[in-house]
Length: 315
Image (cartoon, rainbow, N blue to C red; front, side, top):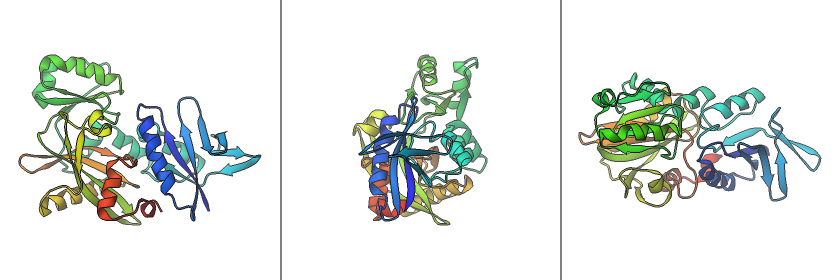
């Protein structure tokens, strides 16, 4: 049986969410084919663990010792949201030690993690994305110039964050600077992005051998002003799967999702978030290259609606 590391944790505030997702993945891996071990990565150490104990990871070859015997991983299932799993750093390390993994390559993960840069890249392929302005740490901030491009209301967010940490919806010019300051606490760069009014939907996608397949679309109806952390993780939203869209819009979203996945040469399970504006045009908001996989997460809901068992997909 193949020895598989289910990697969880990370260095960001999404650590707790990652651990929940990893448990779902661990529980659903086929024990007739895989011998999985959970591996926690955090700021202090890399640790494999099971019911019998905890074992330090040897970073020279991504292995550990148990009862005097070396356990060498043959595959890694990365379930870290945020750094170092979603930004390509962990993939780069695994490439160096020769361990294959479930996600896109290090370069693609690094691109999709940077919201502004990824959207601008996809814009060159004709993908609709919101107007946006990138702000770097040393940039002089001119609120009026920024708002000439994106208008109010707008979203201010870290380019390299997740789970809506550091995100603010700004409706007044006087609130823009404080929102930018707040976003910089969660990321290295900040994007001020046009707020598009419309319906929020998300579509899962994966590669089945060489065929790219889209999952049923979910519509997200937040009780809050947008799909923030509270709405995502504290039950303050309705998630309707499959979304109540007509056949043409459903096919448009699924085809667009598969096109983006193909443009980026992605691997593994991903999820694309959109706003369908009042004219019926879908705008890509962001790509989730390692989407949540806990029982409460959206992708498992999509799989259930499609009649796909998670353990079959993971195999």
